[in-house]
Length: 405
Length: 210
Ligand SMILES: Nc1ncnc2c1ncn2[C@@H]1O[C@H](COP(=O)(O)OP(=O)(O)OP(=O)(O)O)[C@@H](O)[C@H]1O
Ligand SMILES: [Mg+2]
Image (cartoon, rainbow over all chains, first blue to last red; front, side, top):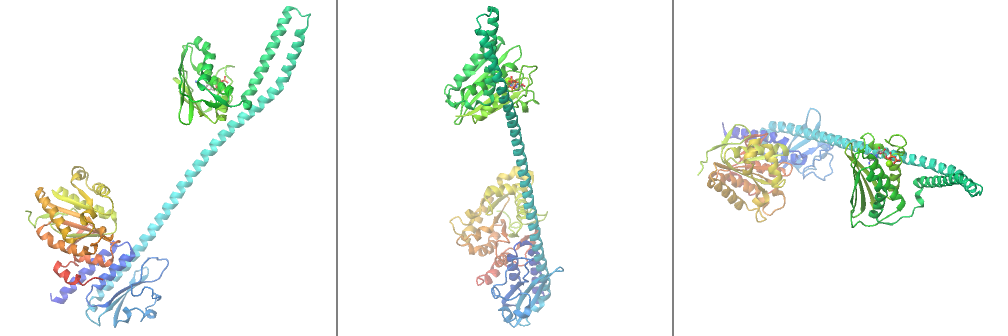
């Protein structure tokens, strides 16, 4: 092998290696730089070097820059003839042009300054080959770009869909909740209407009956037996109007004025009232009062009503063998809690969602009206508090009333 | 002293190469790079070599985790501790400036300590992107790479220098090719036709400042 063919072999292997490396560049700018460097290193390349021009094609958007010599010259890049004489490189005596074409399209061309008809001519076929590889690499870049654009577009769409689904779920959830609340409010207001009409319809007749009975009672000619009956009648009338008032109180307790209350004392009173019953039913009461419980603002008789309802429910849930009711009070920085826990039957799981509904009761016969919890719920809500239940069927139930401090 | 002609496995294929083969890896795909380098390091660990790694793209802990993740379970479990990953900046420019001679001393020290510690050989790989961060002396990177070729004659450690093709400019990449006798292309170690012996290289490089 003579010197020149040894050099030819070396150059060829270099160009092949460079060709192999084209795929390593992801950035077109770096690719173009590298291509220019590779060609500049070829024997016989003139001092003006190499210019890589890409066809201006917005669709391609390869982000490639023109060579330093051409940049900013404002030449159209699609016509060699027109740009002739303006590029430093083209002013040289000789330059060779290598199109950057693939089967699909043309990406531009490489201009290589040559020194006369000198040594470069021998490498021309290699460079043609190399230029083809550059075009393929550009096309690959472009396709990768399109693909990744496409993928990120898909990812964006996917993200949007996910968001939309999550939003819709949230929407449905709030809708469901507000429907539930509406339903509850509706039930309450229907009940309220019913009750106020009952109160209205009943109170005047009861009042009338009592007036009549009172007049009869005053009659001197009455026998003792009859008089005691009228007395009983009047007493029962009073009881009835009291009950009617109470009924009204359940749904229009707005008259109640909030005052500072000692919840411990209030709870203790209610337990005391029930003590006799608890004893007779072998129910032990355990009091865990927080001695430092802060006072809270609330309507006393309403809160008493709540405590009473909870105690009654607890008592009613405890079977004949007896059991235990624990009452706990505690405070956090923001709230005060009352916890009523019993060792009763527990709430059947399928009943749990409904226990705060008006008229929902599992108690047989006339024993329960199903109003206790519903009324309590209304009262606690009005106090900007909350009432929760935890129950293990067969083991017992815990009601937690949270009230703001 | 280790014989210079010991053949060591590179991990890419079953092939072995003489210890002290100076290689570069020019890449743009990070996952592919990690995989190649992990194989190279794993082969070193399994071959009882001292193994060093100089990380720049991410904190050493992260890179170590990623590298171990690419190794076989056995190598990662038993020898993960042997993989010494350090911050490239601290290794190449400990005083805030890059001085080729000092770094070559560091490599010599690394090799000598491997011998003293009873390792059969030594290998290292570095992410060279630290050189793009304006640290004084960074412009002497190519010079340093060329000098490694002299160093490995007496201290045959096996280095792979990693260059991200999308970070370094075209001229630097071509110069890098000129100073690495071997390069890794598509997971294969191949002879680099651009390689020039250091003396040859410096003939043109000194005036080559474009
Ligand atoms: N402590 C409890 N243990 C088990 N079940 C309970 C308890 N408290 C309430 N429940 C369940 O919730 C239902 C509704 O209670 P709520 O107090 O509203 O009505 P009631 O007790 O049935 O009737 P009312 O309180 O009007 O007399 C009860 O029928 C019962 O099934
Ligand atoms: Mg009740």
